[in-house]
Image 1: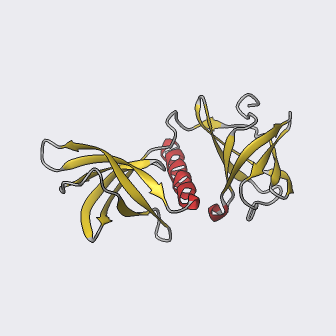
Image 2: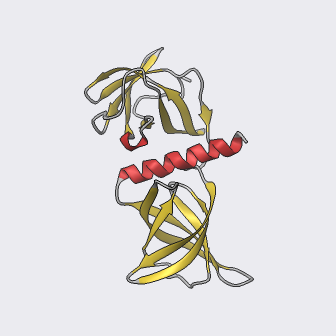
Length: 196
């Protein structure tokens, strides 16, 4: 595990209340602990309360659970986890996500069907000929209580043989919390599907 937890590596921390998600940089690595310098105040992160951690390595996205041993301002010392797992090699976990939604820009609304999503973007199907240069507003329903609003920028459009279009594109977020929320949602769903 120690070779995966390296100084200067960016890391995301998600406590049980995901609205208090935070991120930071690993500034010190010891045999039993590693220290993170957070970007934001550690609201909702408590000593000895387990959090989820996500970081990018050469092997893919590393995921593990652990807890803060000490919290001093924005510096938190984390116990080295007993076990970890790699989620996948791509930067963001992609999951199947089929919903009938609206894509809107400049008073024009397109009816779409989402096929899959990740925190980086999504793939959709639509009957409409969508402008690849456009930026579109979309609201992604993650649960009855929770949704994420972001902007969708098409990157690739393919015409389907049976009519309509399949479009892949990337997300741009209004704030970092929405990106963290979608990252966590996709990761949890991916783990749930693998464990079925």
